[in-house]
Length: 180
Image (cartoon, rainbow, N blue to C red; front, side, top):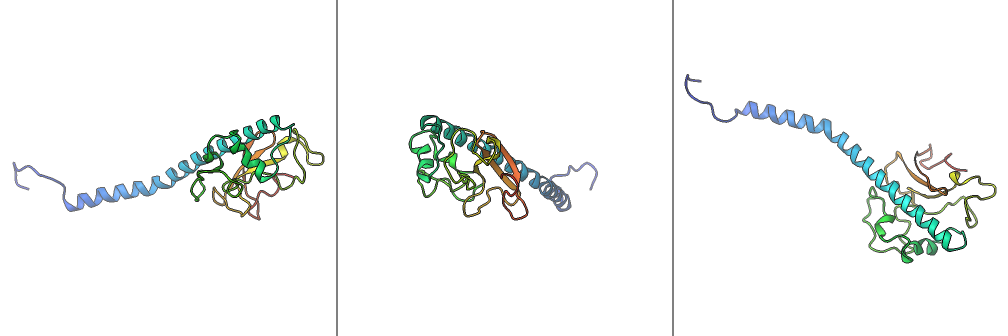
């Protein structure tokens, strides 16, 4: 460079160095941002299950202490306005689009909403032979066809006592060992 001449712009090498730094930072930050995004989705999912649990409790209060048992009774959580929006039945990590309306054919699109371990209707917070309310799941993040909303890590489980907990999948890819 000559003395007294002002330099304008970047050289090609300087631009390549800046671009390499930006690409490296993006590569480092992207996985962390994706994990944070999934954590947010899990929190929304837990809130959805919490709302479903509250709606089921209100339903039980109105129907002699019995929780919804058939798919039609679960659909009534929406049709009878215990839950106001169909999005409550949709996990934000679900790859399928959210439903516009709830029917017996799509109510278990993102969540399975009954305990296959319970062969009879659930009343109050205890079932003989199965233990207390904190061991009986009534909703979870694994559909009847085995769709896993949050990947292969695990999912949220709604228990009869209203608690929601994250559980990792067992060796067979299910919630083995979580409940009786």
